[in-house]
Length: 300
Image (cartoon, rainbow, N blue to C red; front, side, top):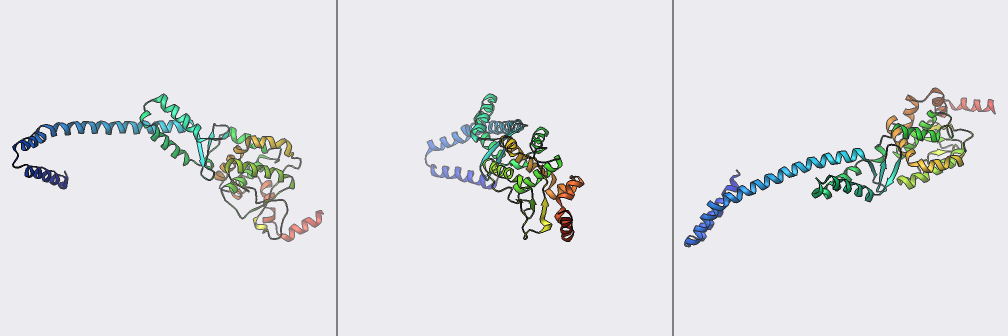
């Protein structure tokens, strides 16, 4: 026991005795309260305290289990820049309102009933944890990845490697990587890039995620920072546009996943791309300028 507490108690009783030293009735009341009532009151307070502690421990454990199960069953994510919540059902990503999450959460708590008295505390803790789960840290299932690759290949790119490289570049742009690189592409891809920028703005609040894709080389661009993007010469934006709008958020999430998985687009070329794609993409970087000029003159 703390000496300070003990001394305060003794001082308080002594002060009471001193105050009522000439009042026999009050001295009897002090004795009665200290000797008769105080032990019983303290015993009850101790029992109630232990019940509260045990109850809190039980509810804390139940809350942790509930939160873990709820977040495992419901893949919710968040982006702070646009204050939006997202849901992933194992196949597609969707924007979801926080009211929908709260409704589902409170409905589950009501069914469970154990956490009814802690429903607001549980709601706060779950929303807090969801806000710590960035949409850009999600790992899409194989079906989602294949669906996105099927959007790009073979309509826009001739191989899946080219499609994966393109997605990794987009992911880098969203995650602010390799911002010094310039990607030279066929003018036919311009409308597609515009559509992707529009989808990006409305779904994740990011603008100009394709601003480093260009269709004309400028003398200020360093060859070391230039990468060539090979696209299907027969691509049709009209066929592709509707599919992109429907699955645009999936494409963005797969893109950031590839960027996280492969570190960046150059690393993808160096570790995963076939030699044909690697040589084509690095053409301006790896081939001496005089050799590029000579090759151009011989062919044209």
